[in-house]
Image (cartoon, rainbow, N blue to C red; front, top):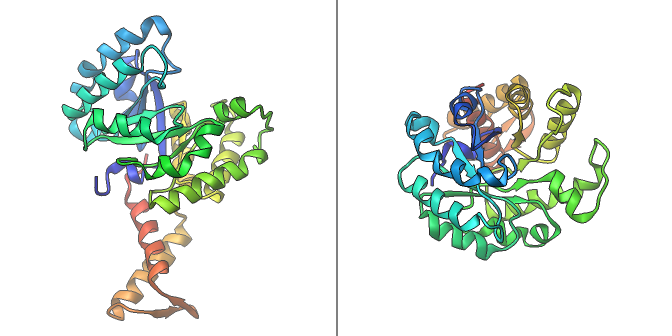
Length: 286
């Protein structure tokens, strides 16, 4: 699990599990990751057939694309959860997907059981969507095989009875809690929630800028048109990249150790920031 492609992905595009013709198209949209959705996007009467069709759909994809695939299963306690777990375990074992998104994540034990089901190669992304999930966020972040935390902003509002405006100011403490849990667990930056109206470009830009200010490194997307704008905002700017290259050049020229750049001491944390910016830039653009 060292540096999987999805660790630095800036966009995760949802696509319905029962629309196999869209799976390859979603991957071709330039998104960092694709979440094939067995939960909200699939009607109850179609869940079984959608689940059964995933292996054939994914087998037709190149291996590099499969490493960008996650499947969102149905939550624990639903009639479909156990069968979903068996299905994704088989998909991971065959190398057809990178891992699993667990909605309504609230207990570390649920992640432990899911990790046992999918095996050590399966990545897990717990989706924090409730007050119970927030209360357990440190345990969820520290669970084995967790790649990143993700925020279900709309479901969270519904769970706790909030009626947020577009700026979602009431959710700033929640986003901070996810960020701090991420940092304590040593995970890559968390994944922010969706912008529900994919046609509202101003709202998308504001939501993505807020995500970056709050320390989030990626965002969930519901339409291919959201991918490129989100990817651009969450990536490093030209000025940031120029600074990062200067930092690395100065450190190399000095043979390591502490150096000074523009009157500022460049020590290990600064070097790590520069390296992260350059690593983000190296990610394939949309």
